[in-house]
Image (cartoon, rainbow, N blue to C red):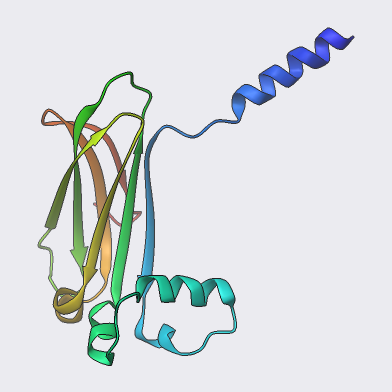
Length: 149
C-alpha cells in the first residue's frame, strides 16, 4: 500500500514545475491611478512604475502600457533569441508598429516593452498585440491578444 502512495506522490510532484514557453505579462498605468488608493497592492505597483519620476510632467511621461515577455526553455547551452513585439494602437489606424530586443537565454530570458510618453499620448492605448520569440530568423513561440487578426 505504501508503494502506491509513493508512486502517487512522485507523479503529482512531477506535475509541479515551471511552465516552459512564452509568457506575456501586461500592465496599464493610467493617470487616475496617481491618486491615493486604499489597496496597498495597487499603490505599490503604481509606485514601482513611477519610480524616478519627480515632477508632474515626468509622471505623465510614464503613463501608458507595459509588457514583460518571459521565455523559458530547457537547454544545456546559451542561445541567442530575438523578441518581436507587434501592436496596433487606437489612434494609429491599421498600421502595425514593431519593437525588437535581442537576448541570450540558457533557461530564461526577459524582455520589456513600453508604450508610454508622446507615443501613448498621441496614438492612445494598445488595442491588439502579438509577441514572438525568434531564433536564427525562425519563429519558435508566439502569443497574441484576443483582438489580433
